[in-house]
Image 1 (cartoon, rainbow, N blue to C red):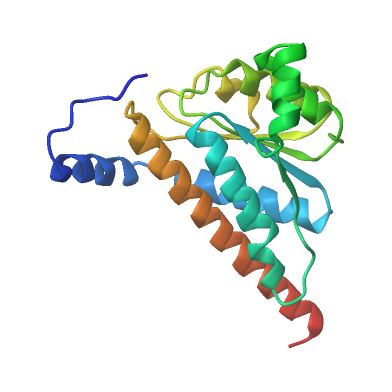
Image 2: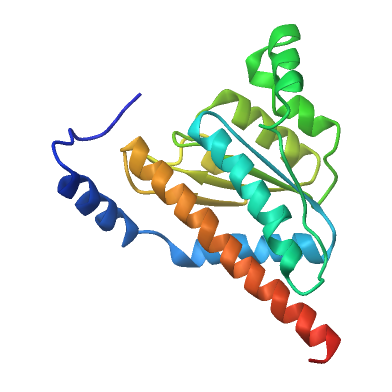
Length: 201
């Protein structure tokens, strides 16, 4: 695990965080929100997956999209699933096949053309994430990623990929969470406006 530059105090950490924030590609983050709104409008599924801290974020983001948007003035519910949440299925695939299959084999049960496979990986090089993205592309699904460092191999497998320009894994994970929250807020606002417009209010 690469923790980037040595951190000796809190000021140093937050100064580094602030510097990376200013370099984030806002337009690409907005593109992800656009894709999710389109998926909701066409009732497509969104599948989230990642390892470690990224697994936690996959679950968190699935909760935000699935429950958080349920309050958008009675609009369509998000069809969203985090493959990190079914521990028996993950461990069964890891045990009976291999760990690299734990997301791809879950995805194989569900994925349809134009669904969204949403990968989260600090390094962009986790084989189980790459395998799931490759399977999704082969099935005609859209692929989205949040990465760090230089994007790793994941970048070339994604239709849209936001790479946090940092080699500090904690900074990368901080900003993956911040981006997920920003995307959720954008999506939620747009769904609310759409529902209000449809009702003539």
